[in-house]
Image (cartoon, rainbow, N blue to C red; front, side):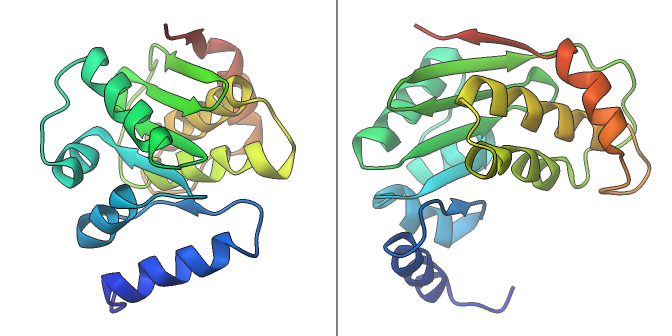
Length: 171
């Protein structure tokens, strides 16, 4: 808050030239700038925000797939689209994957997107393959949704959820 969207985008652009992995998780006008020119950036976004930034509704998996591929074609390194209780989709130059799970207990979604982003950061930090990182990110988001307050979940809780996340290649 308080940072002009053009300045935020320019900061991301400059950092992407110096740092191997920049994960952008932002809404609104800044997201519109990012999706217009996502070169060298990794993007984490929810379905509604991405549809708004692209100017069309993402109604089904086909629309999501096309949107993810479009951003890769524009130069994004990685695209993750979160879908709330429906899971998430992730795209990189090697392919596309869909994560799904049955949430055993849901309390609040507040902070789940940020928790997903934290889990996704393992992709770069631990050198994980994207399908594995997608499972961890989804488990972090799901663990957060099982708590009353954001970011109050434990590593043990995430580790229990990871095997319950089903990740499949999308063709």
